[in-house]
Amino acid sequence: MLEIENHTVWYESLQGDIKALDRCRLRVKAGSITAILGINGAGKTTLFRSVAGLLDEFDAVAAGGSISFEGIPIDRLNCRGRIRAGISQAPQGRHIFFTMTVADNLQMGAFTRRGSKKAIASEQKNVYDLFPVLGRRRRQKAGTLSGGEQQMLAIGRALMASPRLLMLDEPFLGLAPVAIEQLAAAMQQLKERGVTILLAEQRAKAALAAADTVWVMEDGFMVADGPASDVAASAMVRRKFFGETK
Image (cartoon, rainbow, N blue to C red; front, side):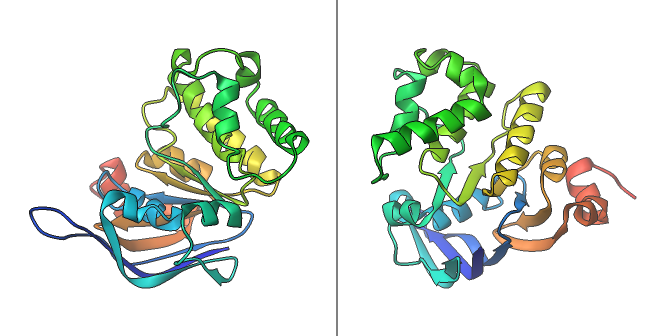
């Protein structure tokens, strides 16, 4: 579904250009949950910005490589065009609208939709079915939700665009174990509904448990990939993410 080849990205700064991605590659199979595992600063968010068409917003420049979605190059599509093509994301930090209600936050996620109000209402119902707590609190201001509920709302807002590829940037960040379990279960439900998920995480245990395929990123470059069980068993991952010395 998603293919990235030799993708290089630089950030412009007063101190000089900084290379964030270095000939990065990635394959995401349709109908899968794919995780990108890497420590903070590895380049995961920059890769997501590249796929979403947001590099210009962060003074970043793609200096090579290609990105294709469902066999079609999307390098020249802007952010809105990529959402309409079927790509949506819940960004790191959630970025929900705190003073707006849960329901209004979800409506904001449908801003590119050209369908009828009935279709948008149906999508909103699907979100409430996936996250029942949001349905119960639809009239509540988003800023009063718990951290886990806010993450559910960020994911729900992304789903309002009816994506075929859903990107989740650090969805487990700062959450209690029970909230992580709830989100992981929701990802499996989305997979069963036919939504492909690309997950970026530094919490290795949670990412490895949730994903079918895992790519390991280091300094903007993919250093390993494979089935989650194989990656979890590799000496490099055990050393880097679990502190094992043997």
